Structure formats: structure tokens, C-alpha cells
Length: 114
Length: 114
Image (cartoon, rainbow over the protein chains, first blue to last red):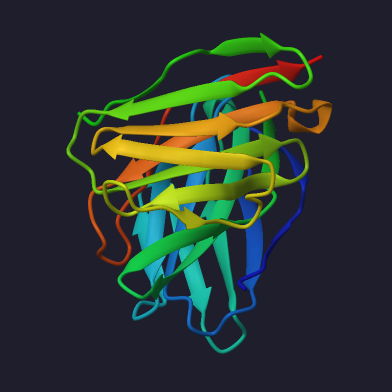
């Protein structure tokens, strides 16, 4: 089955710095890669996703890049703010007999200090 | 706005009890999922359902079963609760069987088995 590795497990930055979280996946058939943000005590929510036919996607201060050859994808957050503090999960998905499931990484706890 | 609700936010049960966790979504989604979330392990898929009365095992189904008698409701059952099933349980749903659709999560049920 699919295996998703996520690094680092914790990341501390100063407000205004950039943060990068990296994930690798094992199954070359995976073709959809979402990122979820989970604030303390809240449910995970999708913040950005990318499909395998695209190399990069940007939405304001967040961007995701995908390298299919190397089987890795990354989340980039620029100009970090204290409200960016949360746990971030990457995931990989592939279609399987008409349905798709997500395999998640173990998460990265991002702490943005004012 | 998609709404996924779970029957309890916190639950305390005794070892050996049969436990029911309920999840309801109000957006007519075909697919529903149960995950458990443990520190340092991320979200792991227990079971999922892509249609009424249909179920598929995820990555960690041992000790669990599920029921989906109606489209909007997906139940997770712990046949005989054990202490190693103490965890946060998250339900999710998504619209259909198409690739890449967003999963929407419920608020979670924190289960403590004594």
C-alpha cells in the first residue's frame, strides 16, 4: 500500500519567516495530494491541494510543489503569522476500483512565534 | 456549508464494553470514512464506505466494525473496547467516487477506555 513520510515533525519559526514542510510518497500511481491544517482542538481542514498533472499551485501565502519523478511534494508558507500555528498533514490519494482513499503523513506541528 | 457531526465529543468506557460512535453528514455525500488520530502517528484509516450498506477495510480495521444503513449516517463499532483503543476518532465524508474530492471532517470523538 501507499506510505507517506512527512518531515519535520515539529517546526518553529519567527513571525514573518517562511516555513517548508516536505512529504514523500511510495506509490507512483498516487495522483492527488492535499494538505490539511488542524488547529488545536479543531477538525482538520483542507488548505490546498495539487493534482499530478500540475507541478505547482499557489494560494496567497501558501504554495505546494510536486515532483512526480522524485515522488515528493512540499508545502510552503511565506510571511508566517501566529495564526498559522497548527498541525499540518500531507496526504496522497489514488483511485482504486471507482473510489479513492487518502493516506496521511504523521503531521508537522508548526509554531510561529510573534 | 458542509456539516459533519459526531454524536459525542468525549466518551469514557470500560474495557470489554461495546461502543458505538455515530457520524452524520448533511450533504448527501456517497463516501464516508473513519480515522483514528494518535500523537505522532497522524490519521490512520479504519474503515470506509462508498455507498449505503457497502464497507471496506482501511489500514487498521482490527477490533472495529462499521454500519451504514442510511446514506447520511456511518457508525463505528468497537465490539469489545480495549485500552489500546483509547484515541481520537475522526469521521469524514466526501461527495462521490471521483478522484481528488475534498474530505470534510467531523469535530472528533475523544474516547478513553479504562
